[in-house]
Image (tube, rainbow, N blue to C red; front, side, top):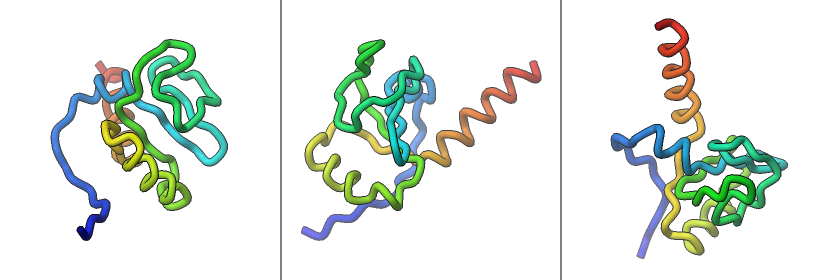
Length: 100
């Protein structure tokens, strides 16, 4: 089987993503819901707020490509979110709320 990663666009609830998102950087990961930091990338839930991670995003996907491939096999229930798309959408929502 010849499988590769590719972007797929579909409508999703941004609030649901924010509630269950693990953001991975080069040195540490953090929970988007409670902003807890230094979470292990293989954590199933946040150690502070105990939210289940159903989504994961990488600040720099190029440096984490091997981790993405491994995680997709070990944790098939995870959905991978593009970090740039996520920050663009959440930023636009914050701006809209501020200008109300």
